[in-house]
Length: 315
Image 1 (cartoon, rainbow, N blue to C red):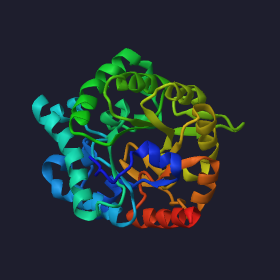
Image 2: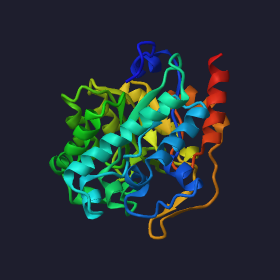
Image 3: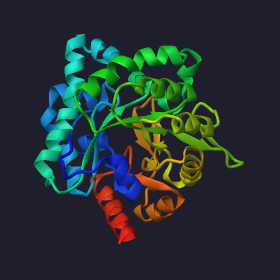
Image 4: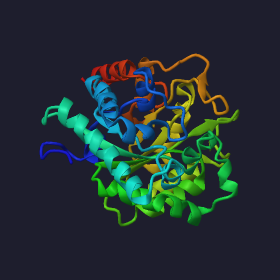
């Protein structure tokens, strides 16, 4: 947990901007780790936990104030398919928080506010087929089924004592409803982050095609949700979503776009050029973003530039 000198994240966001980390898997791959399995970066929780600590450390060294755990694609079903039992899965989920906490302890002085966010990816992430970018499984799973899927993994992560839950890359209204409902009674704050698109007339939609405003409204009414926003979205298309999230929710906005490259789910690789430009942070801040970082393909160097830009903005 944060030291007594560290304010809570909600309070920090009310006061100004906070720097989030970038693509953990991207940094692990850059360091030579093969993440091509269905478990993605979660595989290293068992196989090479020290590598996870070092990757977190790279973002902390670049100025990140929030580090996000390697649990995005971790699930009981996914680990079971890899031969791990329920107890072992719980232990690895808890370990993801402990490793992030270790990186903070090793790299950050006690007088620098830093928080650990437990990543809770959508059901589609566990499928490892790119469906978090379509929300297509919404035709098969209702809110009740999605609550069942998330319940035990949330409990394991909360048991490890993160500072905040990152309910992220959510592609559909039903999953927002399920996760917000599951927050009740956990006693840990959370942010809710959609992955969105903006259509030709400027309407911001979930990846499943629903009005994103409806999802932001669900988060608005949840006392434990401290920020609402978007992630893993093209950086050139985020400002309308940021403005909408701020207007509908009345809460600080979290924003961490990907690099702008496109994910090829069949080939399991990113294609196209990067167009994440740290100087755009000024426009994002002006639109309402307060917790700002990057998602897939965003490196520690880029987060360092974001931190530098935010520092200049706040001075």
